[in-house]
Length: 202
Picture 1 (cartoon, rainbow, N blue to C red):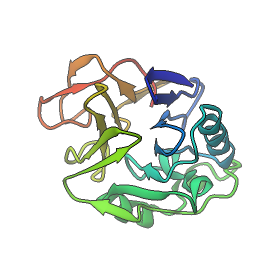
Picture 2 (picture 1 turned 180 degrees about the vertical axis):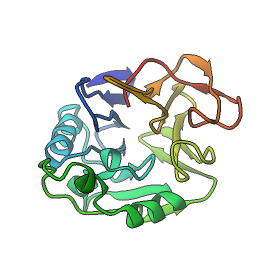
Picture 3 (picture 1 turned 90 degrees about the vertical axis):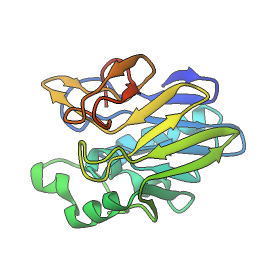
Picture 4 (picture 1 turned 60 degrees about the vertical axis):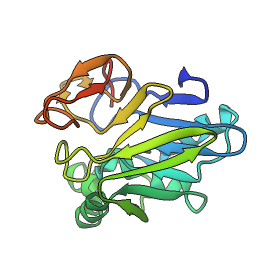
């Protein structure tokens, strides 16, 4: 776990293969919000433990940045306490994809995985307030998928976004704050609009 700002944390998984995403969570002793889960039940349980170890209650809101299983397979670990939020296309794509990772890696032990798409959807943008933190959930248009979401914390200057590139042994930017100019074809941004990102992992 890496603390990015007061009450804002990143759950960073080490490099080592496919389906290793990072997640983020924020909150205080009263409430919390989680951005993405994990590809397996075991990893999602570790994420759950990290949230509790940070002194936060289990999240009442889980934001899915897109439908891929490495970001959504662990959703069930956080229900029934949480509601799942995502773009309307994320919901449709997740339902259509089903147990997508099982088809790619049938020998992998994913644990108990229920397909749990967003129960709260939006079309353009959505703002929620958790523990006094403004959380903007923004659809950037078609990027990694047609249902991507950027999670932006304007006061803290941090953003989380869906995976936008992948190379052997290296994953894309997940949480960051350094200003970079991102092309729509390679990340979750419109045209060349400035987004905040830094480093690898996601």
